[in-house]
Length: 99
Image (cartoon, rainbow, N blue to C red):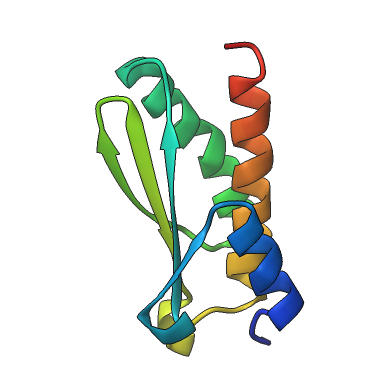
C-alpha cells in the first residue's frame, strides 16, 4: 500500500482537508442544516468506507461532522485515505447541492 503523492495531498488541501501530525492524518469539518442531515451524511459515507474496508474516525456535533482519516496499521496516510476523502467530498457536494 502506497502513501498519498504530494499532488494528492495538495488536492486534498485545496478541498479543505487539513494535514495533521506531520502528514500522518487528514481532517475536515462538514456543516449541515441540522442533526438529522449530519447523521444521514454518516450513513452516506458508510457504504464507501465498507467497500474500501477503510473506516474514518468521526465526531458529530449537532450540525457538524468532523472526519479524520489515517491508516492506523501503516502509521500514516495511504491511497485508501485519499480515495475515501475524495469520495466523502463527492458525497458532501451531492448532499448539500440541494440546500
